[in-house]
Length: 502
Ligand code: PHE
Image 1 (cartoon, rainbow, N blue to C red):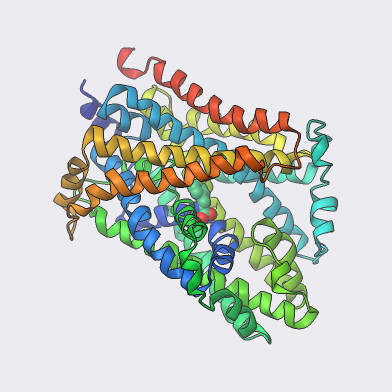
Image 2: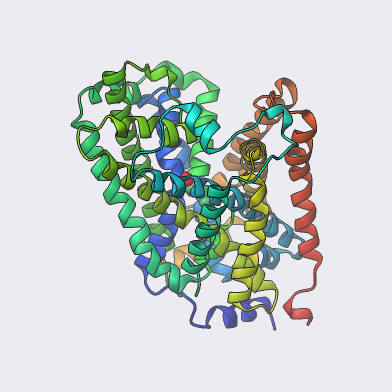
């Protein structure tokens, strides 16, 4: 059988998306994650406030949207998850598909652990037993050990492990029958967090001090636009937020029916994701303004990331004039429903990749891969888990993800030829993409990402930031080991015999 026939017979097994809305919600659900709430607002605040929005939009249109179109167009054209899709361009490129899939696999191993923290905090919010200072989160909850003793794992924190198990059951059930099940689940997991976000925006802006917080978030500092680091932050954020580089959109789009409008979908997804991030910032910074107003904390001392979700926001909620428990529950339900569709899109991509290559039933692939990811994730539930998570996350998203992005652009730009994807997409889309896209894929995207990669590499090697507090052996194993190990595993997977040869 030719590759395309094989793909056609695979994809016509009644597994496709039930409607266009289901597909768009699935893709939006993957893109909109906890990053929109705990990452974007702070990246914006630190990099020029309102002026950053402009830089962000440029990054969105010059790299984010072109890559999203690339990944989606490729899945739509080849009816395949990443490995078979790239393999159909040229056999050795299957390796690149596996690399993208593996980067996503590593991400979901620890993303699920962060979801478990949220689940634990959801339970705590019933009686607000969460303390709300950094000590409670790091010492009492995570039972953090000393970073210098990272190799002494200490014990597993039971609550986090139990939460992790629950999260995996939830993820596995959400993709039980692939796109069919996902298409139903996302109606809830996309709309519910939006509704809750709106509640937090209204609650936030009606609190005293909110305006001060919003001023921090949005007052434009145009001089920052001249700083290269601001541009890098924008490209990094766009890339992370749209979930490009993991092959997710390739896997999802491979289940689209013929004659789907790809271009429109890409713009809807990208704009919905950005709008949510912007609104997320309003909710977060109005709350921070209120916290500063009531307890005199200074905005400069507040950080994004986990600190925001598990320390600052609980502190804000404690100060709410009525029903703080209710807001606590809503906040963590919001984070969990934001995260769940990102997590299952990652698992679904691995499942699709494995099913494309081997004759394995969806159920076996689904449960088997989830079980492996769960086992790999256990290290992050130990007392030194936070440190391992930190190292793995840095190398996975700052290096491997960017490398995949560059190679994807080169593979399509120079090996397949971007016009092939563009023609395929244009045939069935309402508005047509013109030749500008080819040049973004050939030149702008690889160049911008390469500069970012080089700067990060230089910083990591010279000032050892941000790994200064860890023993260098740990960084060698979990960081550099990952960087070398994943491409090797991808190679082994490529060399394995697949369906056709059996
Ligand atoms: N886009 C997600 C966010 O903004 C992050 C993510 C990327 C999650 C890829 C899953 C897969 O939070």
